[in-house]
Length: 117
Image (cartoon, rainbow, N blue to C red; front, side, top):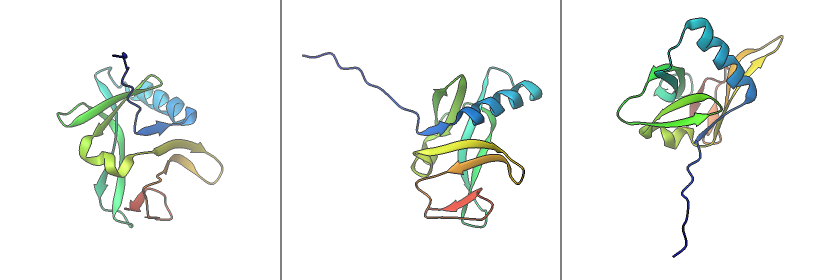
């Protein structure tokens, strides 16, 4: 019988710009090593769901991934809405902040922080 290795890929992607900004925020805010980056969704926003992005501790229903050197926490129930999402950080003249490119979103609002599925 052939020995097969099971590989698990993170359901979310963080760009280099997002990783850099998260590291700066973590250092500035004094985020401890026991915290990871929570990526999730919640009801609300102008399109039905809003994104959750912030530092938090791991909870019972979370899956944990390592992207670059950032621990990423995702509640298992949120994976259906986040699978394949790319999170970036934009620092331009007209727009500055995290952006979400979600292939599961059927519609998004103008601000880019809420979506419908």
